[in-house]
Image (tube, rainbow, N blue to C red; front, top):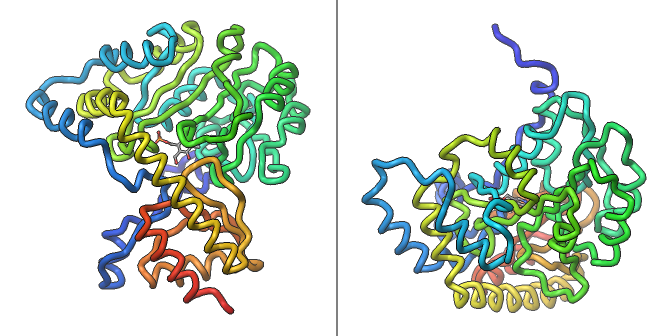
Length: 359
Ligand SMILES: Cc1ncc(COP(=O)(O)O)c(C=O)c1O
């Protein structure tokens, strides 16, 4: 039988959040809620849905490989040149493109733990070496990450806000980190939850781009823009960097309904504001209820909350919550990540939690 190379066989498969339909089919229940994948619980912007529907009549055509209209709109909004943007089938694809474009086998990539696991999986698949630096106080330990740089370091991944902890690194921390990073190392700052951040000292990563640093900022339409199902995200970088990545990119990697919907969602600022308000309200409610239940949590700058339970109970709690029709995400032996949902979903989660945690 054909065998994959050892670096592929040893990859731990990514386990996505369980779909609602699957849970309901398995347990024969209805009315369950999914708070496992940090999606926008409000739904997509109605303007995005309309734009997507209108694009359906042209599905016989290949999409615009250059994402012209979306590129123009984003370039105006972000005040960057069109060539400084690159689009992907989700920001996941941009992570993959960066690794495939810049990594030689044997090169090292630094990332954090716990953080978004896709970084290390993609690096491993490309034959690179992962240098994993534990978080300190639930946040990226940028000092330790800078100290881990060697001659073999090619890329450093920083999720800001971090998934699963919802924490941020500040401007002062990033400034001091960037001073220590050599100019031939690509720093990828993954800002999938950028739009949710309220902290005043959140780092403005675009500043380092303006300084001409080797930087790639990742954003997505999957989170606040509510288009996770369409798979569209983008990167902002120097034109020399996007030009190399474009050579590796499949020519029609972003489908046409996604391009149309993303452009409409971008313009629907009312939908974004509404989503932010609902998230803030849900956050306050969950903080209050978790405190009442004496459950430790990490204050979040995103649309999910990292909760810490009694030692080694996360798996058991996850299963018990499933039986109550609530899908969350176990992210460690004692830790669970819960997406902030609509008021009724948050309430259902708290009620289920009250039922399943030992008094
Ligand atoms: C930190 C982070 N980056 C990237 C992504 C992937 O987003 P996309 O749907 O754009 O591929 C996620 C999704 O969960 C995430 O949490």
